[in-house]
Length: 171
Image 1 (cartoon, rainbow, N blue to C red):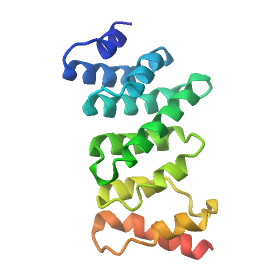
Image 2: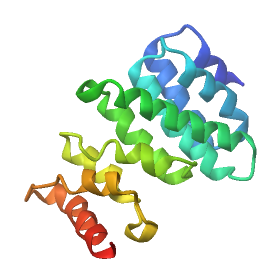
Image 3: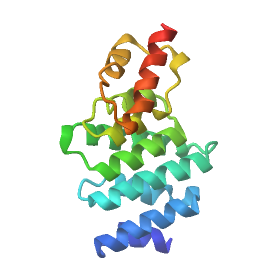
Image 4: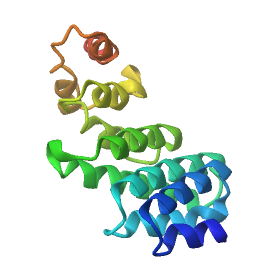
């Protein structure tokens, strides 16, 4: 309760950010409400939002059978969709922590949401977005075309390129 009060209170942004991080580290489903509130509040600072989406992933993964885990998974998708709508002005930390949370929880629609970041100009974001995909999952052709855009020789892009190649081979 005290960490939730720190997260949702009007204290310094750094305090709220650390409270979100701490709630995630505890992984108790009792922290879900405060995390959801922080993610839904449009005035939440980006650093706090990043740690809140990370916490949502940790809590949902640790409590997968609890019905609130589905709500946390939907909040992760919503956060990433919101960041994607900012085009190339998205918050880097929120996207990376959100993609990690997405891979932990794997809510319905996770592959489609992650695939939207496969065309990011940031190699790390592209690599994280492609990390959890299964080439045998039968991706729709529009997602395969997104993967084929990798033309880089940089080491950070290689896992992304290999996934694209694997998709080509699997049909």
